[in-house]
Each structure stands twice: as C-alpha cells, then as structure tokens.
Length: 345
Ligand code: 5GP
Ligand code: MN
Image (tube, rainbow, N blue to C red):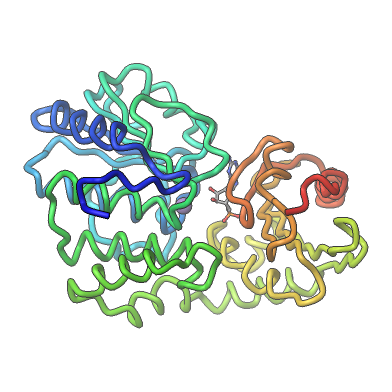
C-alpha cells in the first residue's frame, strides 16, 4: 500500500474530514481569535491534547490563543508543570465570539458546561475526540473511537498542518497518551501507540520523570484519604449477572477531613479496578449535596460506556462515567439495575 492510498481502518477518520480540518485551521486561525476547549474536570488527555495543539498553533504563528475548560478553574497538581499552561484562561473570561473553536476529548456537549453555546457563535469549529459515545456535535469532526487517546488525533492533525513535534508539544501529547493508555497497559495499546510514544520520546522527553510527576506522586493526606475510602469498599460477586462488581464512595467531608482537593480522587479507581474477583469497578465521588461523579471500569466483559449512556453519561467501552443522584447506595442501586445481560461484551 502506498502513501497516496487512503487507509480504510475501521472507525478511522475519512480523508475529506482531515482535509476539511486542515483547511478550516488554515483559513480561520492565522489572524483570528482561536478558542480551545477541553472537558470539565480535565484529565491528562484533555489538557495534554488541548495544550499540545495550542502550542502547535503558536508555532504556526497564531497568537490570539485562549485555552479553557468549564467548571472549577483548577489545574490538578500532577499537571501544573505541563507546557502551555500560560495559554489557560478561566471559562468566564474567554472571548465570547471566537473565529475558530477547537474542542478536545469532549464526548458530549454537556461536558463543556456553559461553554457549549460558544460553538454556535464561532465562525468555524473542529472537534477532536476518541469517545465511542461521542454525540456528534460541532462543525468539522475528527472522532476516531479506535484511537487510544485524543492526542493520537492531535498528533496527526499537527503533522498534516506541517507542524514539527518539539519537546514541549511532545510532553503534552505524551502525558495525554500515557494517561489514557494507563501507562501503555490498556486495551488500545497497539503498535501504533508505541510508535507514537517513540516519536514523542525522541524529542528528548524523560518518561520516568514524567510518570513520577503524573502518576506516582500524591500528598500524604491523599494516601490517608484513600485508606479511609478503600476501607469501606463493598464486594458484590453476584452483580452484573455474576461477573461481579466492587464499589466505594468518597464524600466532600472525606476530602475536607484530609485537606484534599477533589481531583486527587481521580486516581482512586486504580486500586479499586485491581480487585481480582470482579469485572466491574466503581468509585462514586461526591461533587455536591446529593450529586455524585461516578467512575466505571470493566476488565473486558461489560460495556460500561453503554451502561453510562443509559444513565446520562458516556465514555469508552471499558472506562466510562455518569452523574448520579441521591445517596451512594441509591446511585449503586440504579447502576446495578443497568448491569443487564445486553451490556455484556
Ligand atoms: P473517569 O472515570 O476517568 O472520570 O472517566 C472515564 C471516561 O468516561 C473518560 O473518557 C470520560 O471522558 C468519560 N466520562 C466520565 N464521566 C462522564 C460523564 O458524565 N459523561 C460523559 N459523556 N462521559 C463521561
Ligand atoms: Mn481521552
């Protein structure tokens, strides 16, 4: 197969969509107001994809750049050394009439909060994502559910825009890729993923230093908080038709007692999903009175994205989430009822 032949990878982005994205960026970004948006409670892929692409636009000579995300405007401690953070602007302070909006790692407009409206006011928009549950909003759509991270899509668009990778862009895209592949352990860790990692590391990155900063560093209080929350985990071997579920919950009071910020709980799903007896793991995290952000993981037997979608959320087949209401037990009861045979993979 030659380079001029389109690669018909199932789920991959069509050549005309790549061409439309390149043409849109070239038409509206130089000299225009450019707004980049990623999802609420941003993770490594959301922030890394957005800031990596923003730095790429800067290399193209685009100067009117703002990057933002909805909800509480707080960068989680693991990401406070990420290149490009100087481009971040609080959501309530960004331009309301951009020429071009670029959206990163956002599966549904609800994940952009009040920023969703800006898409309609912009002259053009490009959506870069990899969620199977992506709801189909935006102008030009670069959505590849077969991509391990949104940063895979970002790297290709930068390449098609003739922006070379430098160490700063590469660090953003590496953090994104390492986050969404669970440090190159999860399902989508293909040869293509390792080839991309090789290109990124070749710019001079130090993976051990980045991994320690992103994954292997947390305050003592966060460890004590994890101990409390893990101690109350419940094992339900009969749930999900006998595939089994383990779950726990963390309250705002738990956070306050240990003096911790909400984002520290994002790492809590990792010890929970290691429980050998079950397929499905769940962490229920309080965000307000009676409101909970629910993280779901499967080892491969349950499509937790389908489960999350029925409960108003979304995600990937083996990693998804939704917003639950009531008490933790009520949230789990609602969830348990959705772990039906048709959600099996
Ligand atoms: P996490 O459990 O790490 O917060 O999220 C796992 C995956 O599910 C991520 O890809 C995230 O974007 C997605 N996700 C989590 N919560 C929601 C939600 O409320 N709605 C949607 N559409 N996706 C979510
Ligand atoms: Mn992602």
